[in-house]
Image (cartoon, rainbow, N blue to C red; front, side, top):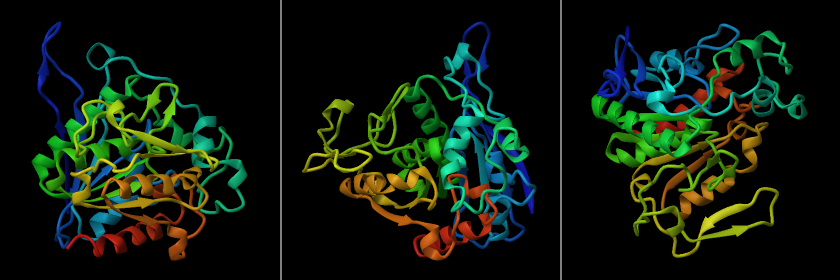
Length: 328
């Protein structure tokens, strides 16, 4: 077994002296014997960092080491401006607001789901030690989501150019980075595992709009769309969360359509209310997207942070079983 780290995006930007801009930290680990066809890239969510995959707040192994045990080389990134990937407003722009512990709990451990959310490893109040451990590493995201998503796309594309074909896992607000990386390098992404990714498609909320459906930065459609306004949309307001799709005939996401996509959703997460919206959008755009709900495979009681919940190993096994049928 070997491990190390390197940086992506080290080119200098001239200003008051030269300095890197938007560099990305990458930590890697490889098994003594590689038995899998390609490595895995793990992209964290929200204001988190790659530590989300390295271990759990109660001291158990994370998905990174489990994947290495399965024979995969693993690359864990800190998205630009997060974790060990530094941010400075003079070169990357302003940051948005911080997520509070209360906001974190609303997403990861909502009180209303406590009876069903049996795999949460801690309590549900800001002073709980597990919650403190999880929120201690949180930071804000860039205030300009389009610039943030474009930067993440560029850095992940550069990583893929360096390491070759890989499976990409992306989580929550790291979802746009995963979709955009696959769009930029469809020949280098063997499969995309989209774990409770930001949505629903065309989400609009203060400070964040997914103008291109899956991201705030441009995706490749056919026929091409130069601006988001060229995507002709229809909205179905009959459900609790509006479903926004393209008018038919729909433009196709020609690059994402070249690879298998898993939409992974936990049974007690708020994201379960719109995973169908994401599947509908992807399939309408020509993508081969499958829904994976671990509960339907006998793995129950999970929420939004399934990679660090008590049964994280069982959740990962469900995903690996899907990958085994998609990546030869």
